[in-house]
Image 1 (tube, each protein chain N blue to C red):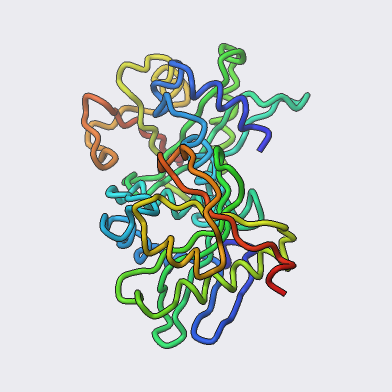
Image 2 (spheres, chains in turn red, brown; image 1 turned 135 degrees about the vertical axis):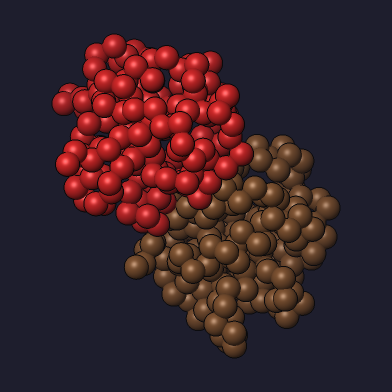
Length: 153
Length: 175
């Protein structure tokens, strides 16, 4: 729960606009508790990312709330730790875990088409836009693009 | 698979136990029913209701308590939820209850709330307990009073807005 305070600052700010924010602390607590519950309910969920000195620098997650048609690989990095390749490193580890442990053939990342940094990262990870991929319930192609990560043969 | 470390509490007519995957649909149906869920938190969207179900499980992991599923001994089905709730922004931990369609008017909430409150005092070590009730929820207010709780103050709840805080008798007053 020590991750909560820094996440609270991030989600109160405009930087959270592509993460579903901005949202208040109460709603964010519900989100974090939902992510904790996901591990028990589904056997996967979100990780906090720490550097080796124990600093909380972001989150990476394997998520499938009920309105997602497929399992998603998602990531967020605290502002002061951007540009260090952390999301790339963490997303690779989470994706490898999902392919190995969950035996998934592919994963998707749902990304706002305006979120160029996230798209650059998805592409660097080997994700490819999937024009036929189903969108989360209630979302449109203007809001969300599907980037697909396939398990290496 | 057990999703939480919740206890199993048995009363005359009910079993209170941790939430399990099979309970999801009953909760989603309740929370989408505005007339019933307005005092709890009306959740019209299915994905939001599912998220609430997941966050209650997270609540158990974070706090060691949360909402229990009330199982009716006769039907074996979920009849509601009852437990101790304390998310971010709450004034203090509260005892909450909700009864699903078809199970109202049978004293289920009273029976469940007595058991959950006794568990909170004896096992969790709480020395006081509140219930937050929106002023329009007259049935819940009546139940709070039947449980011995008294009105303490009006305040602005981060989720529910204008809210009334009721305080339950302390553990020693119930012995």
